[in-house]
Image (cartoon, chains in turn red, blue):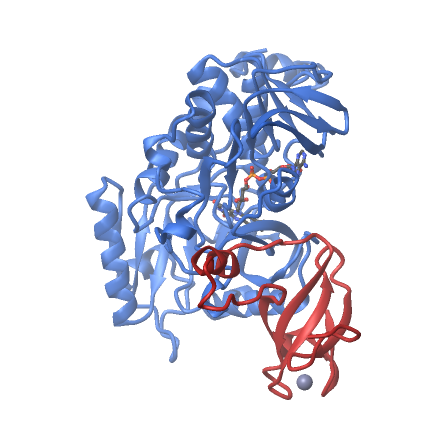
Length: 92
Length: 416
Ligand SMILES: Cc1cc2nc3c(=O)[nH]c(=O)nc-3n(C[C@H](O)[C@H](O)[C@H](O)COP(=O)(O)OP(=O)(O)OC[C@H]3O[C@@H](n4cnc5c(N)ncnc54)[C@H](O)[C@@H]3O)c2cc1C
Ligand SMILES: [Zn+2]
């Protein structure tokens, strides 16, 4: 599996550390349903068989966080962008 | 046909060409008292104990592929009960006791071999942790022996005892741990369940549920609709997909774990040995191949294969522990889909949908649990109540905070 880092180019995935699902969002603490939303955020996962959005950290490269779209069935790597940016073509 | 020395000799005389089918190949009936989805070890054991211990014989096991094609036939076959936490120790010890009588119970040779599981330690801190674990085990009536470096060297003289960075100082031995021929477990339970009237239906994929006013009344499958008011899910790496068909989201990520077999060599490894300075474990099969494994690859995967960096990492750990391994050639490797829960412990529980029950989240340690998991899940399906041994394995523990973080490995909710 090779990942095209937006800063460094195409690199072997062993240079990266994966940190899981990038689709869950931390609920605002003041929300009335904050406790259940927090359980959902911390523990529940859609766990799709197919395209998945994940956090990866380029530990042995530029040391930046990136978001990777990856197919969990074929291991194909799709779009990749800097974690600080919105997904290409999407608003934040 | 009952298996015995007589049946073996008779079939040997006819060149082993006349062995009868081990289980029927039935068409699904329109309705069953209970359905178990997933024909892995856990699903088949559940069906067997439903029929045997609870007299519920109107049962179907639905398997989308073939019996033994999932993790039950892909694991590294280790059984043990060297657990530490309440909720785990008694459960896994009950499972080990089942293993000890299983072949007689099923009339099937599963090659249960209690040749010991040895966990090595390399530092004072690891020794303290291992002593604590051993004491917890002994308090629960589980066998555990603390070995010093001399005793380890006597059992396994080929280990890198005096490595400068990670010298081996001793180990915790569970003599009753060992290995079991994994696919024989699937076949043995399937055959025994079939003989009690259970329909083992292969190539029958669950596609959806029929739910009426919060209660499950049947399933849609690739071979038509089947009615049942009690349905148990035991789909291992596919738990999230199957639960999603009922609108449920689980605290599970599916990961890939790889396993490896070397070329065959003369008897070398006496039992199961695990490294304390990295994640690596090894045993030797009766054919002589070294069977070993280590860490998950680390990313979500349904591919049933991993990547080369993990191969390299596992082999490096192996050579660090057993330098002679560097001379061996790797024969084959493969991967399985692990249903990793967020605390590394399993789930045997009701779901919010009445009549629908969940057995999932066995991570990479569920093979040894097969008998006890089937025993407890059958109890839940038959009575609607959790079995005392499995009471800690609740689905809602992630919301209530009663996590069972025995190893603290796998998915990483703590990093969010
Ligand atoms: C490489 C590796 C090494 C391991 N080593 C060990 C070990 O040494 N010791 C240990 O204790 N554990 C080990 N494990 C873990 C253990 O194998 C699993 O936890 C356990 O086998 C899972 O339970 P099961 O046998 O029921 O799973 P499976 O055999 O995977 O059964 C699940 C079944 O459900 C079926 N299914 C899925 N979706 C559907 C559907 N929609 N409809 C119908 N059927 C469906 C699948 O086809 C599959 O056959 C290892 C696993 C792997 C991959
Ligand atoms: Zn980079």
